Picture 1: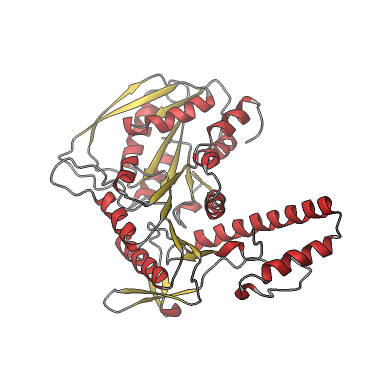
Picture 2: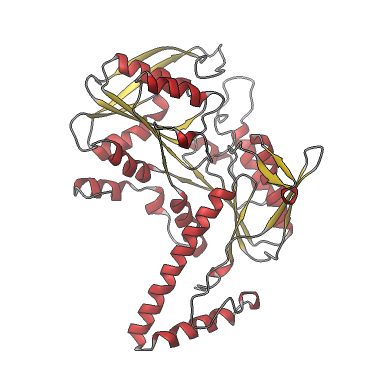
Length: 413
């Protein structure tokens, strides 16, 4: 293992993914520094050598590899890996995007990071242009970046997209497209080897890929840690509620981990109506299977768009006697005027807290008292490092064992 430049691992951020990528890189640097220190300590003990001699020899071996990694500092100190690939993104007057890689990446293992739900103003043309992008603009920026990386000779390309675009268009009810699958097919045809995402809306999407792999991460451990700070998760008054039939498996996971009862909200929908915002959706009736009277309710879902479904569920649960409602959302989009609607719902006492991840860049949402953000960049950094080293992802993809162990031992999460 080359600890000064770990086997050509590199991270490239698209416009919109810079903040997430920078945090991932910070975790990668901490991880490899820890690995370096552990290796030095083990070699000193095993070979009864002086620490300075071990450090000097490790740095010599690293620098004697590819000459591009030579002499990043003194030979008696740790050489910090430079993971980030500099790039220039240009937007032309007609809206076309161009990506330029500003250093050699030939033969490298590249991880392209993009947040397709970042709708805040972004910088282009060396800072001379600022523009907010739609999800389609972000998707196009991914396409041109992947193409640029492949043209520049990258050995392997992994796309890191916490929010998989068009994931809700995964099944056909009539004369409509399977756009979620088509997006994956386009990425595969461009040469993407693997996708890392968070709580993909449907596992059916993976079936559209021929060779490309998809790693679907879950933020359950990070959410449970935050939930334990918000309420007492070991008490008797907690009940887990699935907000709809599609979220049963997710909430069954939490109910099993907490050893709490699982209730279900069944929603009748009028599919002749199109959801416009939080107040105008297609839910016609809600029924509850279970008991929430006097209980603290915890609900988990994968994404929140306009928020109308969740707001109706919260109102219904309060009407059924729920004492407190807490929701966890992996992908907090809060589209349109959703934040304003939740502000009013919070004032009306419909819920206590919403726990979301930083998978989507937010500014206004973080100012709300009722919103709590959990950081998942360490999870993505661990996944990137393990993939790069060819190590197993099992404990990251399925973290039930560690959660159940810590809860059963009454240990802090």
